[in-house]
Image 1 (spheres, rainbow over the protein chains, first blue to last red):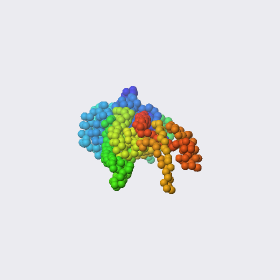
Image 2: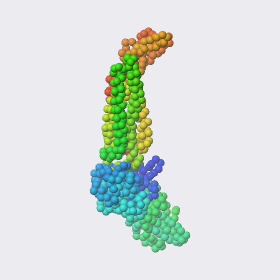
Image 3: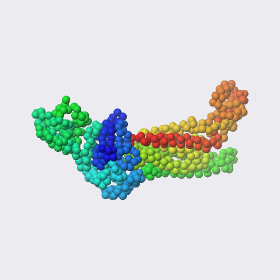
Length: 305
Length: 334
């Protein structure tokens, strides 16, 4: 994949805060035009990755390229919109003044679009930002990103604290931008429902490491539940990688990554949902996932060596 | 960014401008009042207390008492202004950068299409401009007030910062210090606390430790005469530096010498005089050892030189701190 076709590329990226690693050995490559979700538990490194990409903090190790260039240069920042999870807006400013601030600091700012978004959302322009509800704050903060007309949006849990209506409004605004301008999006979220609804690419982070990064369609195609009776001792077919296993008295179910096509008659096969795949990766944690990726410590029976 | 920097701290500019206006009004009113009181006291019949007729005793004593009482008010004006000027700079500096870091609004500001250097440079320029715009007129009023109120010689420590524009450079230094520390400490409260301690330490020590060494000194001899009346006796001193000068220290030196004595010669002369004074009075010792007491002072004519040199020192420090902040901001974690 050429670097032109990649919006965010990291190689061995790591960030350490004193003795704690917030991100380790992060290598990924998100193609242009995708809506990519960063999922993972709290402290997995999602926000750190986004802040490094937005040029707000420097990595301790490794390299990162955003839109083919190093982050934090004026050229890159002009093409990137970043929305922080704290939704920071300038104290004491009115909504109109926030728009003016963005207009003065971004040469590609589209005031007409910004005003239209704010008006559509029924947010008064003359109200101070402290008076806005959480949903309105998020909408204003997102509008600041969108009207900048960026090629890439980096959104850190944009809908985390929103009620369902505000969440839907926010996601609709976001998808409108993606549809109109083909903007690439990388967003971190805990809401797997949002991932299914709007994303086509997923990066799973766990314990500060990337454990899976791929197109959602490919992920769904390349994972299967293998269910069999626990006592028949049937071995898993060669070449599958076990991600997670659940044993009951009646049988064992493996979530495995497979190389298509799957032609297996001894096991009962089932397509997992994206939620099930994500949860399996998160449950298995870094160690399990790494073992699974390397296939080094489990054989095809799913038994530990 | 200029508009953003101004808009972010608009409330502080307005609050400090209001305080500066109140101080200026206070100085204007008290200055006029004291100027008139001094004019009356220095004119006939009181002549500044120098030989008025007994019939005007009550009037002159009343006028003198009124002037003494106004001294407390003048001190209050003086010390309030002395504290206000660097505090203005410190508060603007602490809130300019540390506030954005503390509230995480820096993440919004630094992800727009502009460099970090430009963001900080605009904050530095706008705030420095605000300080100059507010404090230069205030320094003009305060320098007039120092003269009008006959508060103290303009070289005196408590009057020097108010008698010229050097106070503006204190504020600029305080501002730059708070900006630089704000980048490191990232908390407004801590930045203000550390800034206050450092600025206070420098401003309190500078007049004694640094200022006297910035210009050459003069010496003036002081002669002492024994006066005896009945059983009581004492010494009457005459000579010495002009009233407008800033006295630094006194020492003994050989008669006829016009130069400022060196520390070693001052020490030797003092030892000789002490030994002599064990047996005789010091006027006798002076004539016996052919020594004379001198006072070392800075003449009033050096006022503007001192204002310029001290102002340049504080401006240089402010520039260094600002340059450090402009370099450091590129590495600050947002």
